[in-house]
Length: 380
Image 1: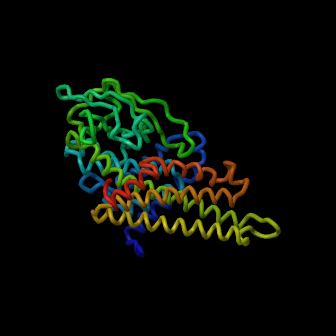
Image 2: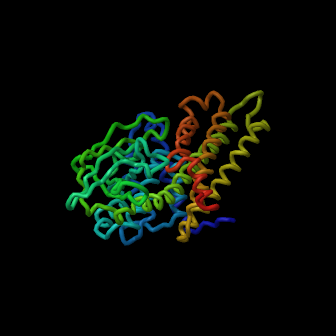
Image 3: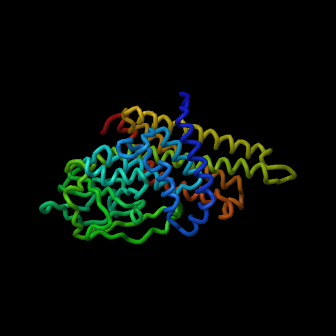
């Protein structure tokens, strides 16, 4: 299937590419080294509409569509994967979930400023003992008058420190997926605190933290959706989130491919550029095929979602393939660079580290295969 981008989609892609090249690429390596959160860049992205791409115009968003969003996110990831993951979680899961399930009051209080980039959204599902199996979560929310009392710990939360609002999943009934509810929590709530920022292998400029709840009083008006609807909200958000991570993976891999082509044309061995050696040429050809296959899967998933159709299988296929592809391509980029690829002076070293997490967060590759099989064969 050939994807013919519209004029508007190409304009969005071009704007994202130019912004990323000018504002993100020059800072990416230093931010990776210092673990500096890209707050200034995210503010500019909000002003340009990149943080409200999937939000309807009614709430100040761009309503650009999933395809344009995927294209833009891939361009941001091409320059800085750390900034891209913040953009992905904010747009795909947080803004999307609030617009779909939130009350008008919640949309005005949270969604409108989020679309403008005034604050960033975070999504708190994972716990120390509940990652791939969210139904085993133990964080609880007990109704007490017009509040819920929340106790528990959430782990590995992107933007958990710097985000302005967190979609929290907590257990409101004892067992099963129907016992999970969603809440909108903010840092000013008593009993809510943030743990240390994790020292990660890659995507180091995005903050990843534990969120701690100790008799945290959350107003009942902050419940997102109905009680017991949290698992449905989470799974719906993850469909969109997986398209985001697939787009991010594609951007990293494209950057690694381009750097490999550039390096192979400059590096000389045995009296000629290494781009002339069949072994290198075949590696680059394989990388290019991998990137193109992932691009088509990602655009297919994005277009299905944009049409309002069930995109669960397509999103998982795109996420699984693109993330594993990014690991292969960045690994081949290291190999082409040889010893230089192993030192931080060359960006492929960062690309390799940034790509590694993509097969883990928002559902591991193994979980994606379960999702795909369930969609095709039904649950056993």
